[in-house]
Image 1 (cartoon, helix red, strand yellow):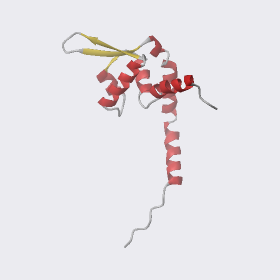
Image 2 (image 1 turned 180 degrees about the horizontal axis):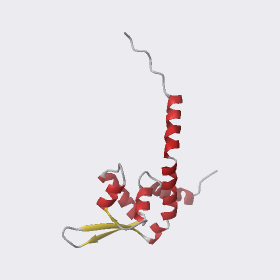
Image 3 (image 1 turned 120 degrees about the vertical axis):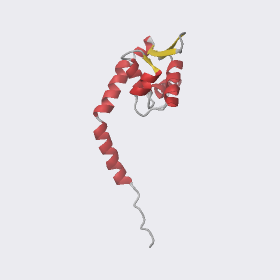
Image 4 (image 1 turned 135 degrees about the horizontal axis):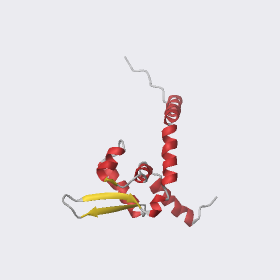
Length: 125
């Protein structure tokens, strides 16, 4: 099967929304508008740099909007655009699926790793 140019473009978008962090960000912003520090606190394991990169990519693709308020200190909030809001159902479903099957996936990974692990050669004495 040969992919059309449109399918390749769709893959680019899927790469963005299907990356390690974007679905979590979309899912959280589907609940409410949030500040950067709130998002960072809610997403276990994400670095400040990776959250910044993720938010910028989502903003570039028109999924997230960034609003800067002219107050001191500056306040920045993130929310879903109307197009981004159409992702909530898909993102929330995938996040819930991952959480519901986390134990089974961990067990499958451990089983796979045990079956494919290279035997450790004996150490010379």
